[in-house]
Amino acid sequence: MFERDLNDRILTLKLAHKKASALDLELCDALRGAIEEAATDNAVGALILTGSGTIFSAGVDLPRMIESGNKYIQPFVESLDAALRALFLFPKPAVAAVNGHAIAGGAILAFACDYRIMCRGRIGVPELLVGVPFPPLALEIVRFAIPRQHIQSMVYLGRTIEAEEARAMGIIDEFVALEDLPTRARVIASQLAGVAPGPFQITKRQLREPFLHDAARIAGTSADTIDAIWAAKETHERIRVYLAKTIGKKG
Image (cartoon, rainbow, N blue to C red; front, top):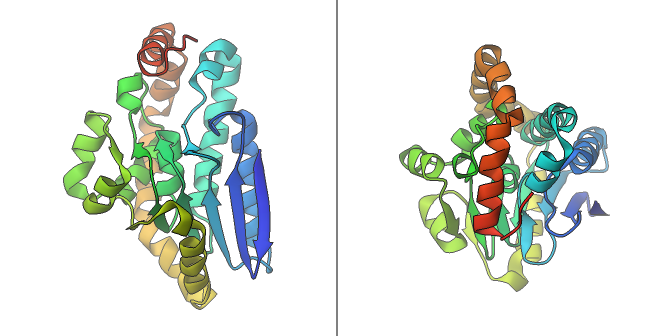
């Protein structure tokens, strides 16, 4: 599901799941476990999350979701939330080395990291075009990462943008050449790993705590509604239409 490499206290997790590292129950469970293990491993000073080929992650595995039915959806949504929570609250530095397209849940994985470097492809959150609402924590991570002046247009219009534009908008931190991505990611990860771990962890938590509170508050009032929409037949029909338009594949 992913390749794991630990070198000089920098742990690299390279997504390598099926064709496009789409997020399914198994990948989310494995990713959460790897991140939680790294959080308590004294040999790990920082994390780099990257992908394979020309894709970082294509987001939720939509065909799997609509084919598997309601018995799959609830455990998957819970697993996705757990993976995002583990990454967003990872107590050490996390760098996203975005090697290609980072769409929907793939973009949110990158947004959950502390520093985002991208070399090519598109990034964005087209959930509303797909026809699904954001789970509360996922939307708070989006709100945390996208500058305020751009968030409504990115979310409401479901925009996906090229890496250079994402850098200009402040959605990613650096745009680099493909061949420079691994080295640059290690440089940043090493630099962040050199920060005193106690103060780093406290400061990171302080920066993210308000968004966690908002996610918990929203979940308390709308989680059941969101879950029902994800499971609804009408939603799955919208997803089929979206898949047919974007990748010519019907679920």
